[in-house]
Image (cartoon, rainbow, N blue to C red; front, side, top):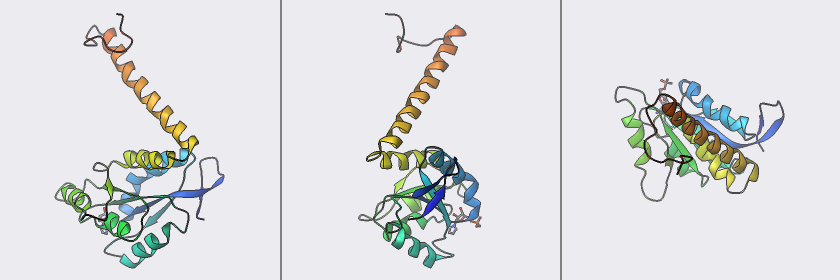
Length: 186
Ligand code: AIR
């Protein structure tokens, strides 16, 4: 089993692999790593390029399930074949993060990822959406993990409270909220 050191310093089993096409993708993907490890989900990161080190990418994907990984997050920019190549060599779920980079602004990466041929799907989040990739990975793990499910549910509760707080501020400014929203007097 691959091991990962969590925020507490405790070594945990790594369940999510974050694969990046280049170390230039790392600053973005650190957000996914930080979110998952702060929820107690062990992660390991690998730099492997579908074009520059294709053998490394394939060999990782072929062994990923045996190593104990349950979900793969793959991030790449430009002609972003990494997520598809990994998905071709593992039946683990692969979540792709296309980079908003290069002269086409990320449209190249997005289309390289979402237009996979029938039979080898990858899940694709938005351009540079590292946080959503982490949340989707957590949702997959939460199917069979009550602790991760509780983290997700409390994240959603906090997120909803933050939005409602914005409406409270509108009310303070005399601008709204529009309509009888939740909590409004009948
Ligand atoms: N990339 C690396 N090998 C294949 C691809 N598509 C991507 C990386 C990175 C971009 O190319 O994922 O987003 C630029 O890489 P670099 O190393 O030149 O910064």
